[in-house]
Every structure is written in C-alpha cells, then in structure tokens.
Image 1 (cartoon, one colour):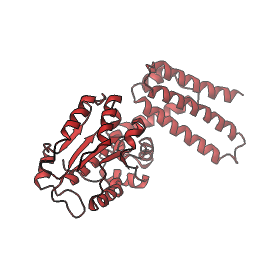
Image 2: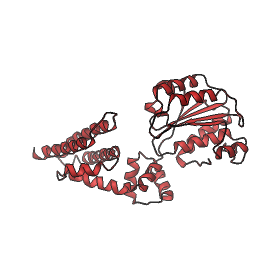
Image 3: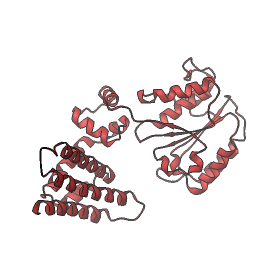
Length: 325
C-alpha cells in the first residue's frame, strides 16, 4: 500500500505533519474534495504514517518496518476499512457496529489504530447514528478518516466532530503541467483547459476523461450545442446521442459554455447595442440547464429521453422567439 503524495496534496500533508510532531492528531478527520484529487490515496498516506514504527524525518512512513510491511500486504491488524459491500450501495449499520466492537481492542502492532470509511456519504441514517456514538466517545490512540466528495450529504452532527481536511483543486497551471507530464493520452492546450474546467480542476478526473475519449465527446457536444443555438438541431437524434453519455457531465458542459457566451456578451456590450438581448437569451437558457440538472440529479424516476428532448425543444423555442422579436 505504498502511496505517493500528489503536488496538490503537499500543503495539507504539511499541516498533518505538524500535528503528528506535536502529538495533536485529531481522533477524526474528514477528507473532502471533488472527485479526481486522490483523496483515498491521501488517506492511505496518512494511515501509513500513523501506523509506522519508524517514521522518516518528513513524517512519512519508512516502508520497511514490521507495521509497514503488514499494511502493504493488506493484513495490518490495527487498520480497518469500511466501504459499501457493493459499488453504489449504502454502508450498513452492521458494518459500523462491527467496527465499534473491534475498536474496543488495544493495538497489537502499532501504537495507533486507524479506520477509513469511504465514501462516507454512503452511510445511511442508521449507520450514521451508530458512527456518531463512536465519534462522541473516541477510543484512545485511534484515528478515524472519513472520505467524501459530497460533504453536504453528511449529517452536521458527524461533520462537527471531525477536523475538515479539504483537498482543493490545484491552480490550472499546476494541473496542466502535471497532466502534460503524466497523462498518457495527450490533447491540445485549449481542449485540456476545457476538460479541466469540466472536471472542476481535478487532474485525475481529466486522466479518466482522456482514457474514455472524453475529449472527442466534449468537442461533439460543443458542435451539438451550436446547432441548438442556430435552431438547426434534430431534438430526437440529438437526444439519442446524448443519452449515450453521462448526462450530468453533458449538462455541466452546457452550463460552462453558456456562461462563456454571457461573459463574451458582457465584454462586447459597449460595442454591440443588441448585446443586452443576447445576455437575456443566455440567462433564460442557463435557467433551463439548471432546471434539467436538478431533475437528472434527483432521486425521482425521470424519463431522461423525454426530459432531454423537451429541453432541446425549449431552448430552440427561446432562441426562435428572440430572433423573431
């Protein structure tokens, strides 16, 4: 389980090092941040350091002691990981109850015990309540790490008992430099910047996009949206194409694109008298996009085919009404 730190994790790691050196490590950490920042890898790095019997001067694990070898082999008796039994499913209360029983035991190899719960937002109400009891009565020399890309989904009572370690997306220049060095699939600078925007600045999310040919999809959606704004799109055919993609990703892309249109319109407003009408048009389209995102992201049973067809038709009507007025 040897892990490395990514450049965007360095400052947060330094904060933890100070806590380790002064013996002020919190009993519970909430590692949060958008998808694609290697939060799990960062948590594993913390675990390795905490459990190590012979830490290096920079507080990272030595990788050679008995504890490190057990951790790398995935058989460390003082480390527990709680994840959904199936991908996308909830973490059950029995898993947390079993965890509470095990935490009554003293460490057998290291001075500490460590726990990772990921993704923490997959805890249901019962398992969250059971975890809360553990947080309210923390065991001695135990570090509990919750990992989530959606901290807003966690109960306030749970979040308030954890120290928040928020992994921020790196500056665009740093992210681009890293991708230029390590991404196997390369794209031009402009497309890379667009993908980074769509990934909310997370470099590893862009790597996944590139591996799935998302660059081609991004350019295709760009062309599709242009045809909608030009009133030349076929809603039925276009919907069939978009349903092959991640709809939330497509809609987020449209949101960024319409925002760029608005920014350009504002910049050109003194030069173009009719610019105000265009801005009004883009605001209406933006409202449509936001409404569809909410419906697609909701837990309700939505017919995506009808939803997207209606969205495309609605946008084309808005465009048509503005051009004919």
